[in-house]
Length: 194
Image (cartoon, rainbow, N blue to C red; front, top):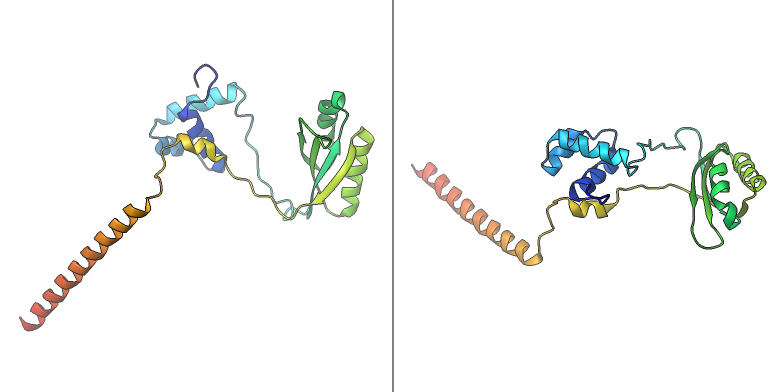
């Protein structure tokens, strides 16, 4: 990182950490980015110290953990109280994430889990008692998280072949395979007659 700006190395480290931070070592990242492990560890420490890497979070399948209901709750908060109310919403039992939105009427989004509908009703009532107006609730079937591919642009990954390259390579392979087959047939004929 130079002057507070991420460079290609930082972006590469972030990309590979997002894939699976628990099972990705600095050596793994170093090998993918053609760096030393110590360089990766130093850069990662800088990313943590600067606040860019805020933590390493576990991805839980709440359904398998006994909380089959997952909901996204859209709320409205008075603008001057939005930040405070969003922070307080994190303390409601069953809330797993809160997003503060900069524009629009629905300016606080709350993710919550529950064992049954009574849990979800209790959560919305508690959000309401904090001063948030619940505007909408959506029951979510599943959520998929992926790394930000913009960081990948900084990493040197093989690019897909163009169509003309693919054709010429496959034509070359076909010619080699035909040549190999005819050589094999010639050898087998020699073996049989020899």
